[in-house]
Image 1 (cartoon, rainbow, N blue to C red):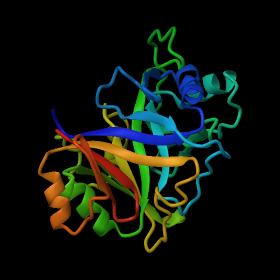
Image 2: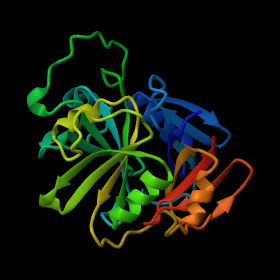
Image 3: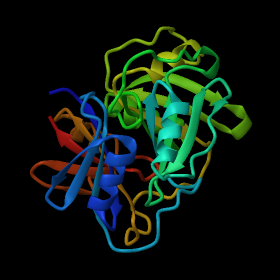
Image 4: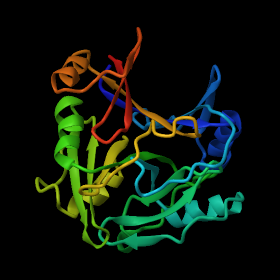
Length: 283
């Protein structure tokens, strides 16, 4: 087995009900695992999953700019088509697609429990070509995968040390968004090399949106005071990010000064520099 970004774990009041929304509206396959439900795009075995676990009844999750967790992003070929199909299935609050600077052509929505979802097109708006393929029977009219799990960070040097140097992820792209005061860093468990050695290059971006695996997207907001995943833990919310990593990762983390939060026979948990809870299974 190789290192892998397994997925995001969300704590919700009714996992089965929300899993069916991911199946019926986003076209994911779902399966029950005890009291949990797994939602994923099975066509891509390197695509992360959404795991829904039981939580107490309560109000919907509301993403705030100071939360360490932001969203999942679905990578697909035709954002306009996907938006149309999602709205036809009863989810009306989907933002109009737009080219976001030189980052990508995208739009946003939330699932019924309030968790943010981005639809990100493989190509920029100006480079889009309508697919002639027969996609009959596909819920979104096309294949797609979870392309990004987005976390926020306040100190990019510390975060890159954690994800790149200790966990062994590869930095693939750096994307500055000066108008909004943040920079995006994309990392993945991969041996692939971007098409330009300058990671700030715009050339990399459409290539990145077409990769068959999920990246961690770090939204760096310098000096931000972020709310970690375990803050207000009695509420419904984000439980953890799950990864598979080599056995020596635990010792690397301890040597670097990180504290193991909990540990059992199969996995252990640790917090990243901004409080994102990371659950690690050794491979």
